[in-house]
Length: 164
Image 1: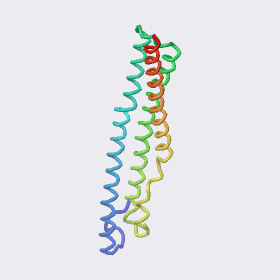
Image 2 (image 1 turned 90 degrees about the vertical axis):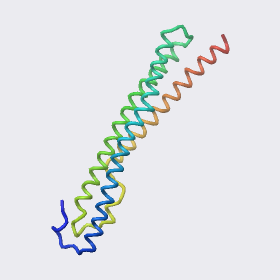
Image 3 (image 1 turned 90 degrees about the horizontal axis):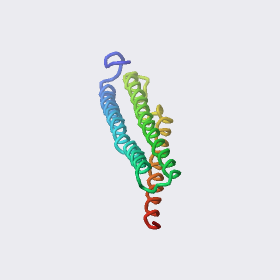
Image 4 (image 1 turned 30 degrees about the vertical axis):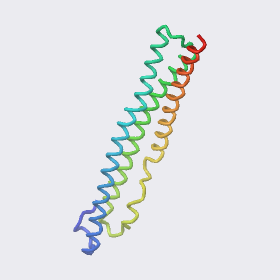
């Protein structure tokens, strides 16, 4: 890693690169905060919804509600899989942000090398791209499972009340 003073850079170029260093550091910190926020939001929303749905359907199946075992079993499986996928989403997102931060850290190390074109340092990080996509897919599937299971259980209970 290069540091100021190790390379023959003009004072103007050194000032430009120090400003670039500050903006890269700011970017890194924003990504770090985004990663942490993403983890919390995933837990607070998708995991909790699926876990609550799982508990609710379990209670309905164990109680006196007229929830057909087939609908109940499918809903339990959907909520359970939703919890697993939501946790996987959280893990993949955190790994994605970790890899993006590593790439930006490496770019910071290149900053004071005279041959480095500073403008290339601001390209969106390539590392973690497939993890972001896979995590996003897991999150969407978990959310869709929660919505589908909730709709199925709700419809079954409402239809049972309307008929019975």
